[in-house]
Picture 1 (cartoon, one colour):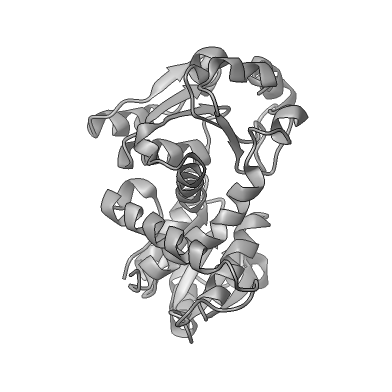
Picture 2 (tube, one colour; picture 1 turned 90 degrees about the vertical axis):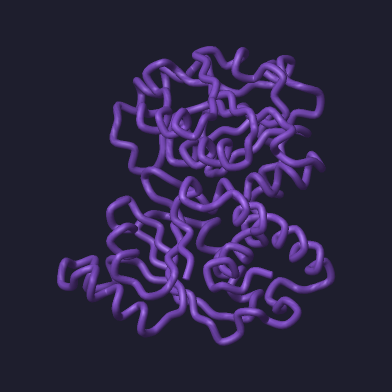
Length: 309
């Protein structure tokens, strides 16, 4: 049984195998309708329970389609629909019930400890659909998208992140270590990655490049990533934070500093951190990026269920 919680804890070889499998599966689906199962229905009869403590559209729909296309089924729950959400049942007991009924569990939560607690008591795989410190399913799918568009392995590319140091960036940093690509980060000094994240990179004999100037961060970039400056449930002075990120807004002029053919990706939903001209322009591949989550999450499910070919 394998979990999918944090990219830093998953072997590089396994992550590469997930991407290889997803590439094959996407290719084989060209002539299939949305809900037609993959050839062989590898997860026929399997059930995935999804629980959401935070709002979602892409994670919810993509995991629904992923398990359906693999021949299985899913049940989506909100925490406030359970005894757990009302304080009437322990995580241990809830985990026991979910393990009894289902074959896998996907949790999108506002509490990292909750994922660790569920892992302790579940007897089925758990997938982190998003937590405060990590968004692994998003970033592994983004690596897939980069390689699909650029037609080369990510290790040969320069990746740039412009924006806040959040859960997506934490996973992107982990990916930079696992896939050995150069990662440049552009953000205000106050919003740089946390010391423990930097120390983990150093411990793995790798390096990330942090700039407090977006133009320097974007220099020679093949990919520019971003995310909302104000995340959902971000408990900060929003007006003050937006002001501090003003000069980090992604505009068309920023691409003068990048390599030719540089692409723009955004995990969505978007905010004021990117100009409409960039978001809807020729450099942007955000819709392809969102769609690819279905294909990659299928391979993640197969990995967790021990059926990755």
